[in-house]
Length: 203
Image (cartoon, rainbow, N blue to C red):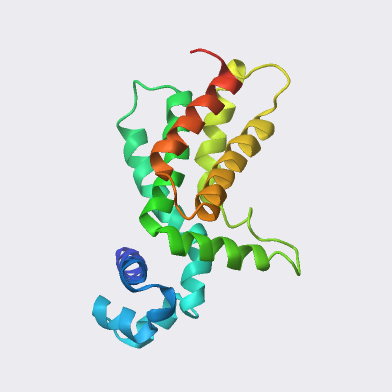
C-alpha cells in the first residue's frame, strides 16, 4: 500500500512539475513559442514523462482549469480550512472563490484565454464535461449548504453556488476580453464581497 502511495505521489509531483514549467515558459515566451521538448528539458524530465500525463501541449491548456486548478485550490483550501477553526462558512466561501482568481493570475493571461477558448469549443459537439470535471468545487457547495440558514429567502443552495461560480467565470472572461486591464485578484475580491453581501446581507 505504501509503495502504491509513493508511486502515486511521485506521479502527481511529476505532473505538477510539467505544468509549472509550462506555465513559466508560456509566460516568458508565449504559447506558440514553447515546445514540448523545451518543457521537458527545463523540467529535467524525459519526453516520455510528458505523454504519461498530457496528450499534447493543448492538453495542458485544456486541463489547466480542471485538474491543475483543482490541485492548486484543493491544497491551499485544505491548509486554510485546517487553520480556520474560528472562521465561519461565509469566510471560507470567500476564501475559496478568491483562490479561483488567484489561480488565473498564477496561470497567466494567455493560458487563461486559451483555456476558455479550447474548453468552450469542446462544448459545441456536446455534451459538455465542464461541470463533471470540477469536482474540486465540492467543498464550496458544502460550505454553502452549511450556511443555508443565513441565505436570503428565495435562493436555494444550488442557486447560490451557480451565482458565485458564474460570477467568477464572468470576471475571468472580462479580464481576458479587456487584455488583463485590471488586477484580477484585487478586483475579484471586491466583486466577491459584494456578491456575498447580496446573498447573506450584513454579517
